Length: 58
Image (cartoon, one colour):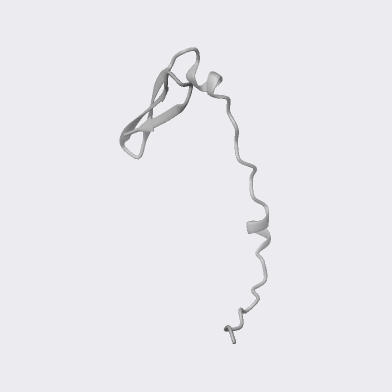
């Protein structure tokens, strides 16, 4: 018999989750094919490939 799972009341603050922000790649790239993103002291490069895919590299 599997162990019983205790039910915990859900915190109201956890339920009030913000929706995920969506941006278009065209708006983000601003007419270019490559941009740099600084995060946590590192620089990442986001680029659009010849096959129109997005690649993020460190």
